[in-house]
Image (cartoon, rainbow, N blue to C red; front, side):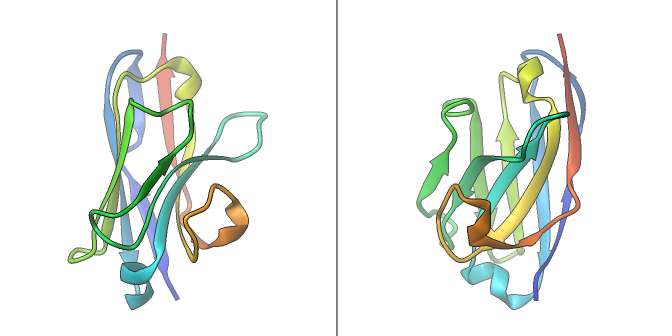
Length: 123
């Protein structure tokens, strides 16, 4: 079992930055793929970024965030992060941390989910 708790969300002006954190419990996390997804009001949840189990592992990003967001993890601390720079109003969403079996953009590959943290980007 893995429990995930996100933090770091908030209100920021366009062009600003936020760093989301994901604290994990459970030994599985260190061998799991970690991902971030987001859900904007009235829209389906979508893939944002993912990183393989190694702390300096393979990463994958949605085209909409590539070059602005950076995913990282520290398996010694069972934590993951999503550094978000050059934020845009369209980045406004609830952001979810997830842990899963495969480096994939599909939510079906992720078995464990956090409760989410709200990010609001004002124009």
